[in-house]
Length: 285
Length: 283
Image 1 (cartoon, rainbow over the protein chains, first blue to last red):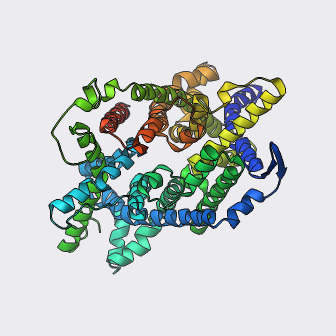
Image 2: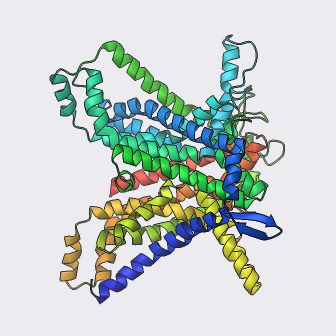
């Protein structure tokens, strides 16, 4: 790097440094500092872990937190189970035109706002909705049925919203698996199950990991789907953050909640990477 | 389980049916949303009262069409303004980032690279509140010491743009870096040998090569910004972008005017998608 290169380097590096420091690093440090402020009077604060203590001592907060984590894991696993056969079909069985059409069709819902997708599910599932009317019309039930506002409806919405982020990495990794490997597996006497377990899944592992991480993140941080499709008691942790910030104006507690959510998501992402021997650079970049 | 290996007929049939069912699942919500935009009823649900275009073109209440709904039209304008700003900013910074990571070796490069990826694994709502908190800290500090209120740092469009920019930049960087990686640097060297300056070489050789990726990044950034909900929700002020406006209406219970907006949105994004595909084919 000569003097010339140095100037170029500084010019190129400064947007990156400004972006990361002003919009990512410092705001998160500030958020953390705020979460350590305990209100002891009008505009009087002291530093303590009081907000975190509130979180652990109030069963509703803790329960919602654990529930959100658990349901996000369930959503991730279900998405993976549903998406894997589809991705395999697109990558290995469909050929030529059909292959590209199916892949493109998987991308379509992503081009549409999450709000529209959720709205679609509301029209389908609500008491006056399509499913309820269809069941009445076919004579299976006699009165309207409410499918909306429960955990199953929420799960359907979460899986729908994140499907794409599982299918794309899976298709990409499965496409790179050579057909002859699968043939070799069969030639060596393996059956479908052996081939799947010993050849296909290990090969698809990077795709499985990156897909799962993204889907988990999206579910954990989702606000719209749980609030619109979930029931009154299926609270989501993001709703608590929102209500502390916007409704109750208790920013200190909201900041602590935000940090806990961030901690949980980082922990699970880190754990998934460690367990599978992947790195963030490889799975994302 | 590949075409060259025979499977029992029943297995192929079940597999095929599963795939078909999956695509029905994907299409169903979008289909019903579009369909009910044409229902002559005050609610987006059955019964079907006949076909109408009122939800697009009728100027009067109660079935006022989307083209006469001032608040929706305004929010589309707001979203477009935000999306254009975010796309311009994030692709600009993303291009710089791509060159930086591709062309330079420096200390802490790998640390910076991981930091650059981080916004993708931070929940959108946390990104939103952290920027909200930090901007208020700065605004309050300035107000206390200088007695001047910086309007831009209070919830509003500037914060929305910054909030979306903070994670869309990562995506723009990845899209552009992926193509830059495939660039043959000897082309640039040839230009240098022929007497071009470094800047001219990049401008006339490398940037044209990157154009499809840059255009792709612009479209993706525009779309992600237009559709963003979580980060926007925490930073929005009095001017609501479309997603927030639709959310507010949806909470109150909606008329099919929302279906009409949704259908227009779908048409808009398909048009963008087709443009992108056509453009990538050409290059």
